[in-house]
Length: 542
Image 1 (cartoon, rainbow, N blue to C red):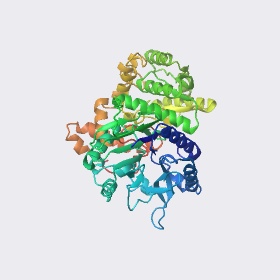
Image 2 (image 1 turned 60 degrees about the horizontal axis):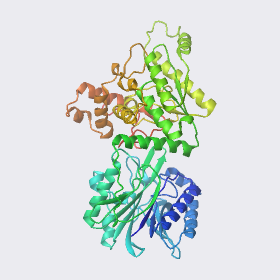
Image 3 (image 1 turned 30 degrees about the horizontal axis):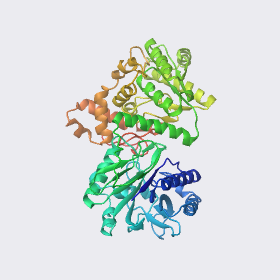
């Protein structure tokens, strides 16, 4: 079977825009010889629509779009994801649906059976699961239609979450192949995980699988595409682009050998570029501003922004104080020159002295401490927000996941911003990204990579005055945050009890900061934000 894949970048709620993309991709796939065309999960509405589904006209207008699509298709069936009303009088009000559209045929529907309600997913809030599945006769074959989670197995989910097995049910009813409409968010290693899972399913059931995934950024989530075909022997035989839209026709019997291995560093970089580009495009922003300190975090953020938005749309600002080194200023200048972005130098030394003077009597007898350090950070936040307001720039924050995890950041200071580009990127990964960026030529100044990291908020300060070495910090954070191991279990792995307890206390006690942070782009298996639901007022493990 010649299956057309419409790996398209849809925008949540943009029903007309998404409709046009679907029609264009369908026509292109049919012209290329497809006898069946797939779109991603909820392609017409965008994924995830979240509480937009409760708007009184949202689902009726979605259904109108399906009817319009039905009038636009020809004899080649189109499978398109959308939100429909639950036809049953009981249960949740809506269903996660796929419409099978074909000229001269009534609209046929498939509803999603397995509704993920974990990590970034909350589908049980909106949707009622399907009660049964059955194959359809499409293009002369009995096709089993599944939607995203319907094909995820307990081995890859780590536990048995569901009572029904849609794939097994469809095979038992004579399905000769399985298609899957998916909106599977990216994290490092996710593309390989999907292929391994589907290959195992195909091996077990002896049928080919056609997996069509979404592409693009929607708020914190990034969808990487990487659609693929696995033959009935479990061999991955064809794939589509990573992090790019593509329309192609693939056949399980005609291997294309299009698989392109990407390193984890390249995956993360391309994901962040896509996430920034789409956040701006879909929110209506055109230009960005960010603080450029000369350190590695702001350098990597600037590189990503320049590639995502174009160098002419990125403004960098250096805001030296009396504690800023000349080396850092030189590194910031070199980075801006290498990227070709505009850079302003707006010192905060004088405003800082004025601000300290305002508190001279109130703070009398008190030594300088983190209060004065945070004043500098907040003056920089004020400076950047002024530029954001005056010129309509979106302010990008430059804090990494290691810092955000333990609260090594300042509310209303370096946390000011509209998008936290690298807030899910650990510091050790930032170093790897910088080296990957420099793989062909020096873009990030070498000194920014090799010098001891420092906030430069007091004399001779380094991050390791306060934090454990980043190699240890990131390793423990991986275990405590992403794998959610207890401090006792982490200590058993050989880490210092004092270090583990320090990290645990600081992660737990800084939830209030993370709640006030700008939305960040997810690239790890568990990010702060939509998939992280920890209480602020809690005493567990403290």
